[in-house]
Amino acid sequence: MLQTRKQFVRGLLLLCCCWSSLHPGCSVRAYNVTFIVCMSYTSLAYSYDYYGPAIDMALRDLNARHSGVIAFQKVNLSPPEIHSCPQLDGKILSLVTDYLFTNETGIRQWSDPDNLNVIIGNGCSDSLRYIGDLARDLNLPVITSGGSGSVLVNNQRFPTMLRLLPYQQSDLVRTLILFMKKFQWQDVSLLCDRNPGLGNFFTLACEGFRDGFLNYGGFNPPNYFPFNTATTTRYDEYLKSAALTSRIFVIVAHGNKTRDIMIEAHRLGMTNGDYVYITTYPLEHPLYGQYRWQVFDDDDDIAKEAFRSLYFVSTRPVRGPDYARFEAELKYRAFFDYNFTYAPEERVMSFLFNFFLFHANENENENRQVGINTLH
Image 1 (tube, helix red, strand yellow):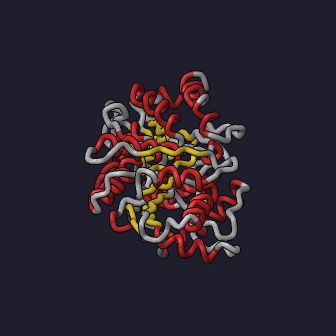
Image 2: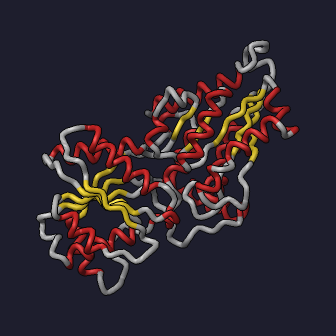
């Protein structure tokens, strides 16, 4: 994967240099790369508030590294009134096509043989699907750190799309399948949070798990228990129903709600070793809650005991001096350039670090790959 990313960076730079067959070679003239950004604002993990500073930092380093050869610039098409994936899904095609074919600057860039447009995608899978089809037809690169929908792994349909998400939905499915096969478990129940206010990760993840168990073979059709944590939910009823047919529960839900489910399981006597609970969380982001037993309330002791029966499948956290420097600068830029403030203990998400490294560093030793981590 690292080698692939490194080759893509070099390929992109070479493409910029040789974009016009009339002017081969980089030493004769300068070329331009325009990053076209179209995202939502606020709340979502892949919003422009989070992404913008990382893009600016990558552009700064790219321009410094390739000064006089390639000029990198950014065009932000993100509407400030867009705050969710469904809102963006309905507008993204018109936003991009209007810019490319009706905006004076966009038309000039589109018709300039020395300019390469690169679409920086958002984290909404449907939006990426729409823009991926357009980019394929227009032969435009799309680079995104989001989009966990299973359809997006189709390289024939989306040949110009590169996703830098720390892991894909298919990675989660394969990890869970291997985990189940190791212990020869065949029956599983999926407890799925379908709260629309949490974006589409949990919904897509649960659908991916369900389809994975059906497609890989060797498993009985999973029991599917969708619920909406935006409303009052009787987790005991779901747990009792699921226990009728399986002893393996996969919880795909908000971190705080996952804790509530485990506390309820303990009260039902279902954390005594007879049942196994598996959960996954996408990224370190307030939208998805805290996946921990200790929140300093009266249920901490119960939650601590219940969490002994819970397995986590997650990305391996990115840490170290490079990440610490990046995190400090990004939070500074977010505050001063975007009027956006991180919470006191909020960490910068690892995919932003991946995005910055991918664009700004060509030294393979400086790259970091975030893999799947299974913890108990």
